Image 1 (spheres, rainbow, N blue to C red):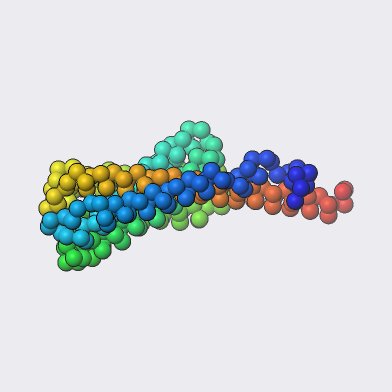
Image 2 (tube, rainbow, N blue to C red):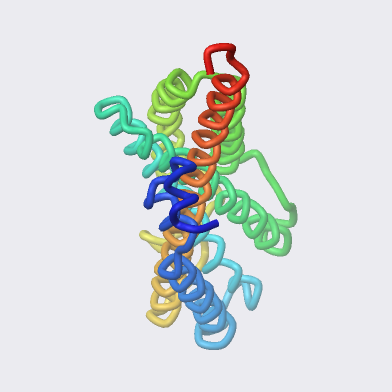
Length: 253
């Protein structure tokens, strides 16, 4: 389609720009390389943990995934507040994108945690405080997506979802402080509890993993925002086309 056709179709230049995103692709590729490098550090650079052995290497991806899940839900909360204050659609799009990406990372944290727990705890899952809160948290944010899907009006959907995302964020501090408030078998990295001996090389690998996974989160949210914008443009063009057809079939045309 030529530029003149785009103009006659009512497509704004911004929609064309969103259709091509070389910076976003470059950011995604960089994030993937960073994750590969962090994984290599976990396998080759970080020392073998004295108590748990090589299975402890899952720790780096597990913690980084959980961190990104918390970050994503925090961004969704902030975007929800921004939408309630400003009413701009971009904040609703950011909240939705962040929740979707955050759910993927939190599911990854649960899976890697289960793989780590089996040889260490003897079970894939146990209903200790943090794991119980994490299970509830996943259900809460799945319910967020279900809430959005159940509402038709875009403004009502965005407003209800914004309030929900703010309320749902309470699960993040509950999960974070669970190992400090209640008796739990989860290791506490900050205090060195949980029977895991942390060395400087382990902390460096963990820092690299946190940075790499955070970069991947940013890249994925950017791509999800791009899809959301294109979906909005498609809905707008479809509406304009329906209006044009209705006018053409009108006896007054």
